[in-house]
Length: 205
Length: 205
Length: 205
Image 1 (cartoon, chains in turn blue, brown, yellow):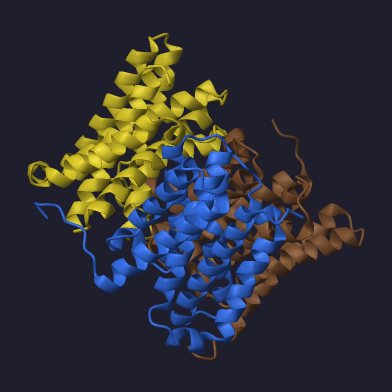
Image 2 (cartoon, chains in turn green, yellow, blue):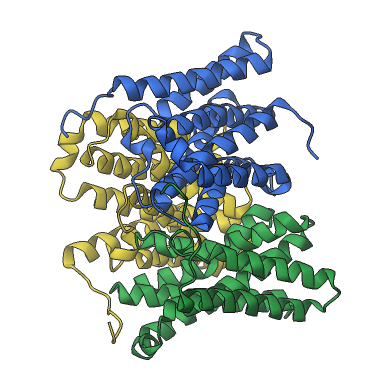
């Protein structure tokens, strides 16, 4: 058993909320119970597995530590049996996705720093970790991924990663820096949706 | 040259049948000879490469052992020149896919156990290996993957993996446990299609 | 800092032109500035990252060497602000894609040989490296990848890889063998588009 270290907890929470988002989309697409569980697991662990592959930490934690699979399956079951309640939330997939985005942006960045990468590639790996699950979710149901369609998405993960790195540099305790960075990513992403923030399009398009 | 060990043979057979399924779909989509060969190779080796990447066994066997490439290309050529005969089969892509599903579910699980993973993650890796090729095939031709659309798909791979693990625990010879598990996966998957087994959908959907 | 070795330069050039092709497609799909940058980075580094993962060279060079990220972002910005000029080119995505195809076919093959793979798998890895970025680009915008739709695509990368291997065998200096192979891939690919070369389709299709 892995010790209850913050970054594992962050990872498990990210897995859970991304799995919720995948399962919710699966229910909306009228997939059956197995499709819901498969999409929950895929979306929940894809970002972390991508991160671990890129860092050379294999087998990836999501395969070595059974709790990741359990978290993703639990999320799938929760959604399957409580989908009516979840659908009452306004834009549930977006909210869960924003939470997962923040959690994985930070966990990816944190793990990359631990593995000796410099800050800039670490922030980039955080973005990859954060958008990986959502990209897989959208590609599997044949939609153009949110990261390409939406104005402030990768940007929110980028800000979260930068906040985390700067927080560490400023001497904040790791857990506090993590919390601030996750919250920042979440708030920026959700605000951008509700306020309809738009990024500029190419002059010639 | 790798010795003629059962798990390599299983792997080569899986590569061949998945390559057949990819090539058959490519012909149906009216791709040319190169598209057929590319899809045959991609689908044939994707599951095994994913498995090897996740286990850290790189370069993956499909790149080190030339027979995998040869098997996939041969499957592509067979389909290209005999597509009329193959199309006379009822649901050929489904049948070949079901065979590949069983072969890779077992080979993935087997290799994961060899690499020291515990049974549950090994079964999971078997599922990943088994569905990898099919997911790539469907994503490349822009269809929602079978694993999400169909009721009993990942489940069949799961049952195969479990049967293999339990067979080994019960002291069966490895080759027998493999054969039983492959057959079980194939039969469950094919029966589920012909009988139209349906898994429950979410109460609120 | 990595030394200015030819294969890194080839790689950086490939990253740049593939990033241009990704960004140009993003602009055409009316994505905003962030979508353009994300697609530029993804397409620019996907082939190389795939190659490095398959060779076990992790973290991949695109994450360790900051110049790759810089090259891809620069390409994204160039396209964003100069998209009108670029669109005046006839088939700009195709031309850039053909250049990237040649550059990565050679760099993938070269690196595989350095890592001790034999020629045939090395040429195959070159093809994977070459088509990786374009496949990701097309999958992300929900199109069937060019490698499947177009007649002479993987074939051009195959010819480039073969030319490189044969050039080395014939005792050519590495840089010359590279230049010939890149040019060959580019010319074959571009000619095939303008001349409308068609590969045969399956007899029964």
